[in-house]
Length: 79
Image 1 (tube, rainbow, N blue to C red):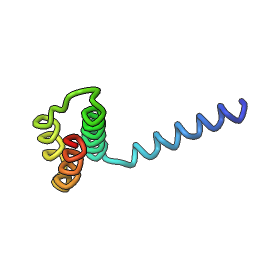
Image 2: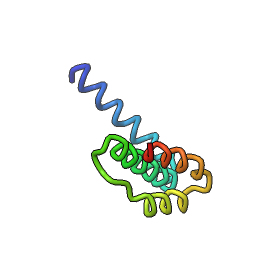
Image 3: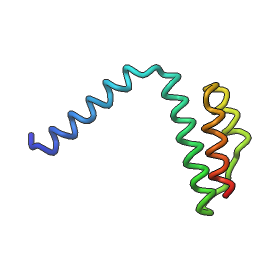
């Protein structure tokens, strides 16, 4: 096994270990936030449209601390 393959295998195992430590609900919240950020970035560059109502409701329902994050993402998408 060469160094590149070994490094890739080690990185994958570390990622799997870290994911095992993070609760599923936290990963779902982060995935929702990442999806919303990606959608806002598409809007900002004119490559898509923003379905804020659905995405914000999902994000806010998953995390009570996400209001500030959602507002900042919304402002990015509206510029």
